Length: 248
Image 1 (cartoon, rainbow, N blue to C red):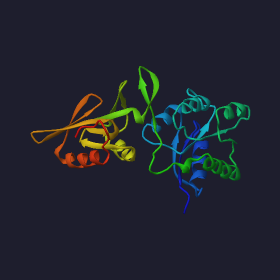
Image 2: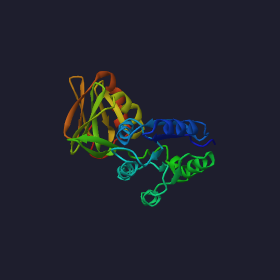
Image 3: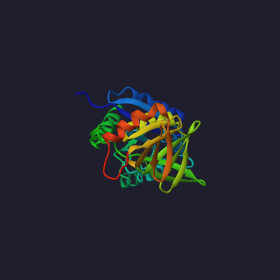
Image 4: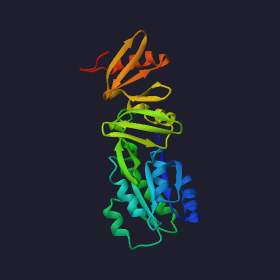
Protein backbone atom coordinates (compact mmCIF):
# COMPACT_ATOMS: atom_id res chain seq x y z
CA UNK A 1 0.00 0.00 0.00
CA UNK A 2 1.34 3.45 -0.92
CA UNK A 3 2.35 5.69 1.97
CA UNK A 4 0.03 8.55 2.84
CA UNK A 5 1.11 11.79 1.20
CA UNK A 6 1.63 14.65 3.62
CA UNK A 7 0.26 18.16 3.79
CA UNK A 8 2.94 20.52 5.12
CA UNK A 9 3.06 24.21 6.02
CA UNK A 10 6.21 26.28 5.41
CA UNK A 11 6.66 29.50 7.41
CA UNK A 12 9.42 31.99 6.54
CA UNK A 13 9.42 35.81 6.35
CA UNK A 14 12.01 35.86 3.55
CA UNK A 15 10.27 35.23 0.18
CA UNK A 16 13.30 33.72 -1.65
CA UNK A 17 13.93 31.20 1.14
CA UNK A 18 10.21 30.44 1.37
CA UNK A 19 9.84 29.87 -2.37
CA UNK A 20 12.95 27.66 -2.53
CA UNK A 21 11.82 25.36 0.28
CA UNK A 22 8.28 25.17 -1.10
CA UNK A 23 9.75 24.16 -4.47
CA UNK A 24 11.99 21.48 -2.93
CA UNK A 25 9.18 20.00 -0.89
CA UNK A 26 6.87 19.80 -3.90
CA UNK A 27 9.44 17.58 -5.63
CA UNK A 28 9.33 15.04 -2.78
CA UNK A 29 7.23 11.92 -3.41
CA UNK A 30 5.91 11.85 0.18
CA UNK A 31 4.58 15.43 0.00
CA UNK A 32 1.09 15.91 -1.37
CA UNK A 33 0.36 19.58 -0.61
CA UNK A 34 2.54 22.51 0.46
CA UNK A 35 1.03 25.57 2.16
CA UNK A 36 3.04 28.75 2.71
CA UNK A 37 2.99 31.62 5.22
CA UNK A 38 5.27 34.65 5.64
CA UNK A 39 4.68 35.12 9.38
CA UNK A 40 3.66 33.24 12.50
CA UNK A 41 0.36 35.13 12.62
CA UNK A 42 -0.44 34.13 9.01
CA UNK A 43 0.44 30.53 9.85
CA UNK A 44 -2.12 30.51 12.67
CA UNK A 45 -4.76 31.95 10.34
CA UNK A 46 -4.06 29.21 7.79
CA UNK A 47 -4.38 26.59 10.53
CA UNK A 48 -7.89 27.84 11.30
CA UNK A 49 -9.00 26.23 8.03
CA UNK A 50 -6.23 23.71 7.26
CA UNK A 51 -4.66 20.97 9.40
CA UNK A 52 -1.07 20.38 8.25
CA UNK A 53 0.68 17.09 8.97
CA UNK A 54 3.92 18.96 9.71
CA UNK A 55 5.40 22.47 9.78
CA UNK A 56 8.73 23.70 8.42
CA UNK A 57 9.44 26.76 10.50
CA UNK A 58 11.97 29.59 10.26
CA UNK A 59 13.21 30.76 13.67
CA UNK A 60 14.12 34.44 13.30
CA UNK A 61 10.99 36.25 12.17
CA UNK A 62 9.60 39.65 13.24
CA UNK A 63 6.68 39.58 15.66
CA UNK A 64 5.83 35.97 16.47
CA UNK A 65 9.16 34.15 16.10
CA UNK A 66 9.48 30.53 15.08
CA UNK A 67 10.22 29.53 18.67
CA UNK A 68 7.16 31.47 19.87
CA UNK A 69 4.96 29.73 17.30
CA UNK A 70 6.38 26.32 18.25
CA UNK A 71 5.45 27.00 21.90
CA UNK A 72 1.92 27.84 20.78
CA UNK A 73 1.70 24.63 18.73
CA UNK A 74 2.96 22.60 21.70
CA UNK A 75 -0.27 23.50 23.50
CA UNK A 76 -2.37 21.78 20.81
CA UNK A 77 -3.83 18.44 21.83
CA UNK A 78 -2.31 16.89 18.70
CA UNK A 79 0.55 19.23 17.73
CA UNK A 80 2.00 18.73 14.24
CA UNK A 81 5.70 17.75 14.04
CA UNK A 82 7.94 20.80 13.64
CA UNK A 83 11.10 21.04 11.55
CA UNK A 84 13.09 24.22 12.18
CA UNK A 85 14.80 25.76 9.16
CA UNK A 86 17.30 28.53 9.91
CA UNK A 87 20.56 30.15 8.89
CA UNK A 88 21.81 30.05 12.49
CA UNK A 89 23.03 27.19 14.66
CA UNK A 90 22.61 28.90 18.03
CA UNK A 91 18.96 27.88 18.54
CA UNK A 92 19.43 24.12 18.21
CA UNK A 93 19.09 23.47 21.95
CA UNK A 94 15.90 25.57 22.13
CA UNK A 95 14.52 23.71 19.11
CA UNK A 96 14.96 20.26 20.57
CA UNK A 97 13.65 21.35 23.98
CA UNK A 98 10.46 22.06 21.99
CA UNK A 99 10.57 18.49 20.60
CA UNK A 100 11.39 19.50 17.03
CA UNK A 101 11.84 16.45 14.83
CA UNK A 102 14.70 18.05 12.91
CA UNK A 103 16.82 21.21 12.57
CA UNK A 104 17.87 22.22 9.05
CA UNK A 105 20.44 24.87 8.19
CA UNK A 106 19.98 27.16 5.19
CA UNK A 107 20.60 26.64 2.36
CA UNK A 108 18.80 23.31 2.80
CA UNK A 109 20.58 20.38 1.19
CA UNK A 110 18.32 17.91 -0.67
CA UNK A 111 19.62 14.92 1.32
CA UNK A 112 18.87 16.66 4.64
CA UNK A 113 15.37 17.51 3.46
CA UNK A 114 14.79 13.84 2.60
CA UNK A 115 15.93 12.92 6.09
CA UNK A 116 13.61 15.51 7.68
CA UNK A 117 10.59 14.13 5.79
CA UNK A 118 11.56 10.62 6.90
CA UNK A 119 11.65 11.78 10.53
CA UNK A 120 8.22 13.34 10.15
CA UNK A 121 6.94 9.94 9.06
CA UNK A 122 8.56 8.31 12.07
CA UNK A 123 6.79 10.83 14.30
CA UNK A 124 3.57 8.97 13.47
CA UNK A 125 1.85 11.44 11.16
CA UNK A 126 0.43 8.74 8.92
CA UNK A 127 -0.42 6.35 11.75
CA UNK A 128 -3.71 7.95 12.84
CA UNK A 129 -6.59 5.48 12.48
CA UNK A 130 -9.09 6.54 9.84
CA UNK A 131 -12.08 5.66 12.03
CA UNK A 132 -10.86 7.72 14.99
CA UNK A 133 -9.98 11.23 13.77
CA UNK A 134 -7.54 13.01 16.04
CA UNK A 135 -9.04 15.90 17.96
CA UNK A 136 -8.30 19.33 16.53
CA UNK A 137 -7.27 22.46 18.40
CA UNK A 138 -8.66 25.72 17.04
CA UNK A 139 -6.98 29.09 17.76
CA UNK A 140 -9.53 31.86 18.43
CA UNK A 141 -9.07 35.58 19.03
CA UNK A 142 -10.61 37.09 22.15
CA UNK A 143 -9.83 40.67 23.12
CA UNK A 144 -6.51 40.62 21.30
CA UNK A 145 -5.49 37.34 22.96
CA UNK A 146 -5.20 34.04 21.07
CA UNK A 147 -6.88 31.20 22.96
CA UNK A 148 -7.34 27.56 22.05
CA UNK A 149 -10.43 25.35 22.06
CA UNK A 150 -10.79 21.69 21.16
CA UNK A 151 -13.11 20.54 18.39
CA UNK A 152 -14.53 17.92 20.77
CA UNK A 153 -15.82 20.77 22.97
CA UNK A 154 -17.76 22.37 20.11
CA UNK A 155 -21.48 21.60 20.43
CA UNK A 156 -22.73 23.32 17.30
CA UNK A 157 -21.57 25.82 14.68
CA UNK A 158 -23.53 28.74 13.30
CA UNK A 159 -22.86 30.40 9.94
CA UNK A 160 -22.02 34.12 9.76
CA UNK A 161 -21.28 34.67 6.07
CA UNK A 162 -17.61 33.85 5.49
CA UNK A 163 -17.21 33.29 9.25
CA UNK A 164 -18.51 30.64 11.63
CA UNK A 165 -19.41 30.90 15.32
CA UNK A 166 -18.33 27.91 17.42
CA UNK A 167 -20.57 27.28 20.42
CA UNK A 168 -19.01 25.50 23.43
CA UNK A 169 -20.01 25.08 27.08
CA UNK A 170 -17.70 28.01 27.92
CA UNK A 171 -19.14 30.42 25.33
CA UNK A 172 -18.97 31.15 21.62
CA UNK A 173 -16.09 32.11 19.33
CA UNK A 174 -16.06 33.60 15.84
CA UNK A 175 -13.53 32.12 13.41
CA UNK A 176 -12.74 33.11 9.83
CA UNK A 177 -13.82 29.83 8.23
CA UNK A 178 -17.02 29.27 6.18
CA UNK A 179 -19.53 26.74 7.50
CA UNK A 180 -19.24 24.67 4.31
CA UNK A 181 -15.50 24.22 4.96
CA UNK A 182 -16.09 23.00 8.52
CA UNK A 183 -18.89 20.70 7.34
CA UNK A 184 -16.50 18.93 4.99
CA UNK A 185 -13.54 18.98 7.37
CA UNK A 186 -15.44 17.76 10.44
CA UNK A 187 -17.80 15.25 8.85
CA UNK A 188 -15.75 12.24 10.00
CA UNK A 189 -15.66 13.69 13.53
CA UNK A 190 -19.47 13.43 13.83
CA UNK A 191 -20.63 16.88 12.72
CA UNK A 192 -23.73 17.04 10.53
CA UNK A 193 -25.63 19.85 8.79
CA UNK A 194 -29.16 20.34 10.13
CA UNK A 195 -29.92 23.69 8.49
CA UNK A 196 -28.28 25.94 5.91
CA UNK A 197 -26.88 27.96 8.84
CA UNK A 198 -26.24 25.20 11.42
CA UNK A 199 -23.83 22.32 11.94
CA UNK A 200 -24.17 20.14 15.06
CA UNK A 201 -22.03 17.56 16.83
CA UNK A 202 -24.00 14.31 17.06
CA UNK A 203 -22.33 13.46 20.37
CA UNK A 204 -23.78 16.61 21.96
CA UNK A 205 -27.38 16.09 20.82
CA UNK A 206 -29.48 15.12 23.87
CA UNK A 207 -33.03 15.37 22.49
CA UNK A 208 -34.91 15.34 19.20
CA UNK A 209 -38.49 16.65 18.91
CA UNK A 210 -41.12 16.47 16.17
CA UNK A 211 -43.88 19.06 16.66
CA UNK A 212 -46.55 19.54 13.98
CA UNK A 213 -44.19 18.11 11.39
CA UNK A 214 -41.34 20.40 12.40
CA UNK A 215 -38.14 18.90 13.80
CA UNK A 216 -35.78 20.37 16.39
CA UNK A 217 -32.90 19.12 18.51
CA UNK A 218 -31.53 20.10 21.90
CA UNK A 219 -27.78 20.62 21.98
CA UNK A 220 -26.18 21.75 25.22
CA UNK A 221 -29.38 23.38 26.42
CA UNK A 222 -30.02 25.17 23.10
CA UNK A 223 -33.01 24.14 21.01
CA UNK A 224 -32.13 24.26 17.31
CA UNK A 225 -34.49 24.06 14.34
CA UNK A 226 -33.85 21.33 11.77
CA UNK A 227 -34.80 22.02 8.15
CA UNK A 228 -37.19 19.59 6.47
CA UNK A 229 -34.57 18.46 3.95
CA UNK A 230 -32.18 17.41 6.74
CA UNK A 231 -34.71 15.85 9.14
CA UNK A 232 -34.71 12.29 7.79
CA UNK A 233 -30.91 12.08 7.50
CA UNK A 234 -30.48 13.45 11.02
CA UNK A 235 -32.97 11.02 12.52
CA UNK A 236 -31.25 8.07 10.84
CA UNK A 237 -27.88 9.25 12.18
CA UNK A 238 -29.23 9.67 15.70
CA UNK A 239 -30.76 6.20 15.64
CA UNK A 240 -27.44 4.70 14.55
CA UNK A 241 -25.58 6.68 17.20
CA UNK A 242 -28.24 6.44 19.91
CA UNK A 243 -27.13 5.92 23.48
CA UNK A 244 -28.83 5.89 26.90
CA UNK A 245 -30.19 9.30 27.84
CA UNK A 246 -30.90 10.55 24.31
CA UNK A 247 -34.60 11.14 23.64
CA UNK A 248 -35.84 10.60 20.10
